[in-house]
Length: 454
Image (cartoon, rainbow, N blue to C red; front, side):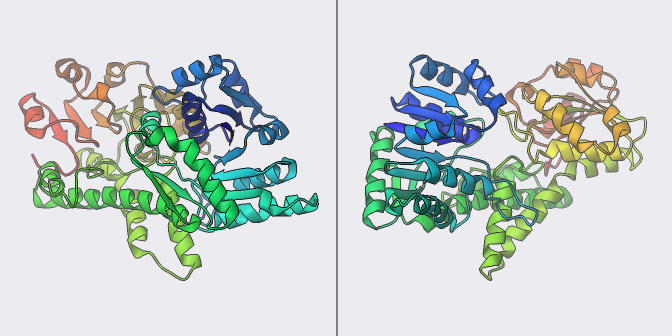
């Protein structure tokens, strides 16, 4: 099938590459000429395991192309995926300007029937806005709005495992209208996703608004579990319990399960923060106040400074002449995504208290360098106290303590003898509970995790 992907960012690239892998003819559009130049030269502007190799394979086979040509992109695909960004607006709602602009471009250039698929994470009612924008452009050219049908097909991709998630999905959600164009669109989507349903049916068909809400509901639920466990971890610290034992005790209940029950420094990334905020905003627009989600957001923001509070309690509020090693900058492992990363808050707070920071991350340091320029734009002196090194052990030299922020596998079994030699004092603040407190004590470390009673 001929498919166009509008937006060659995280979701668009994974969607395009994975659909090309199934033999489809994919045209990826992006209005950023630098991004398209990178892709056409064999590079990939984001880090995602397995994605680069898949793109290379399908470009070589002629099933995947990248361009900035809007007219050509609309002409190419019978199915047009909108996979552009929906960043948070100033009031916390999703900014739909790029989605609507993409819809208008489709309406301006289409001459044959199209199925337009909202792949971007969008609030309930967006499909109606996309339909209206396309219809307005078609009317200008005296073409029937029935040439186009809008489908909601939200993505459920975990950064760091997105290719695997797309190729072996837990579920595929497709929302269509029940009128004849909607039913025809449903049939085209069924054919497109047929290769992913060969083992068993994974597709859930529903109305458009239910599909739109499903994506937000899923992310909000996962964010709630994270904040809930962080609240319990902080309580465990106070009462002397071990949150890891609690996690195993409740996760063994089949009604609860183990997923997203790990305590830490709070969630970040491009999805949970903006989606929880956008869902709360949608509810307010309809006269509903989602108090649970407000609490989820508040807990998460507070959790990003929990390690700083532990450091202050150990070293005092004045951290001048103190230096801390930071292991992990990306908001999660196997990605270079620094959006809403807890590391940015932790580093800014340490610098505010006078400390210096030496940071290491296996993948995200180029992106982190850009983020630090933004974060410290009004504090150039503070920026000078943040440095990055190329090796994890190099970050430890002369530091007062190690602070672990991201749970990269490379951090799970370090050379603890060398680690102790390099630090000024054998102190670890573990924001991801990578190590067992008793084992660390036996190795001679002062160890503080999140909710791990020693």
